[in-house]
Image (cartoon, rainbow, N blue to C red; front, side, top):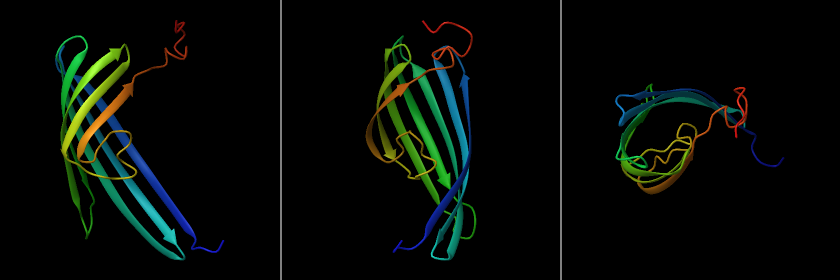
Length: 145
């Protein structure tokens, strides 16, 4: 090719935990780390980033819930940086396993690798979530119907 040779590798490790504190209150946590190496025309650079996130959700009824979200994204090293995110959302269970949420992040963070499917930048957002497990595909030995 005529342009510079570009190669980017991102190695990511992420873990998630869900805990139902009570019948109406649940907590969801996430911890993730990444190591990225970029090579361009013989020049090499690497960096790291770490994400910690916590979501607290309260059920307001059978179909309605509200949540608070907090996140921090930081790098370690000589040029360490920090970004923070804080938001709230209102969710509606449209049908079993499908949730529509409207939320607002007061301030947010951006990372092309660790943000995933969650809206993390500041401002208003709409999110559609679909839950499924191995039962939907018939992998747990039960008929999905």
